[in-house]
Length: 432
Image (cartoon, rainbow, N blue to C red; front, side, top):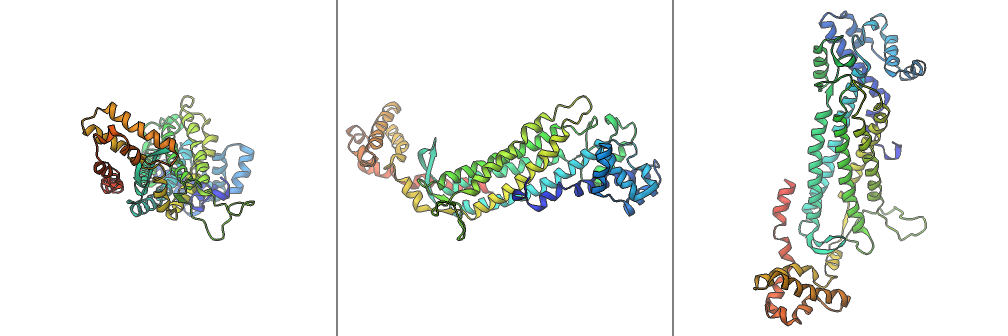
């Protein structure tokens, strides 16, 4: 991922230095257990702890010749520890190192994403509580439906990201597996206790059946989870973008005093952050299909997944880390305009109360079919009057309606408080 959208802590996980550091730790741990079992001399793990090291540039130089990254790595390590190097990687295969290290990197990255989700959740909770009683119009199909509150809107997104965190915790556990089982996963050349030892020291779980690679359905689930998180990022971003439209302007991204919105039009204040987040969501979700396709490998292993993972692993996680942090900032500093929300709510002349009128008529001994006809007839008059007639005026002028509901009952129906009766209980359920 390009530096513009990269945060240093996440990027460091995917640097060669970190990857080879994990590889060296896996080899060292394996040697510690093998020495304990008497398979290799005690001097080997000691040499690895005391002198073990590698040189990234040297590894690249060797790989250019041998065309094998693990062999290049082992050669570089051998140049640091000398004679004992012949016992390193005893009975192991490349995937034992690569896949176990991959699991460590994924868990490291997942821990960062979980912290990022906490930032988003904290921002959403704060703003949802702040605006729990801020009345605004709810829309379906982009058209005014019935009143809601801005706090309830945000609480819905809070609930989505809370589910996302639960899913990611489960996905993290699923990919936190260790495979030190040798060629085709039979342990023919290495004792299973070595895998147990390495797994325990790395806070991983031994893979049930590794064949020769850790099954990629685990990784697919991880990336699918990231994809769902991306869609939740896009969901709230699109909502904010819509609310910032000039014709709506119920909420707006914070605009810094020195910020510029357009090179040509000085008046512009554009929703650039949420537009960016929509784009970031596309990048993250782009990893989902390749991850799913990586599940089907030939027999006990092939490396068709390898190049894919080297690309999607850093790109998806760096994008997710960046996007969640940017989203937390957007929510925290979001400008909210309650007066505009109320102005927009009243633009339709009271049509938002149509369902309450419908229900009141059915309670007044009118069939639902007749009640619907009566209400729709008057609602259409308001639509067609283009603001010259209110819904209340139309209803009061309809003898069939007033025969069932007098003016006092109708005015009692036109009360926004009816729509906030249960807001506190919903937010308590969502934000707890």
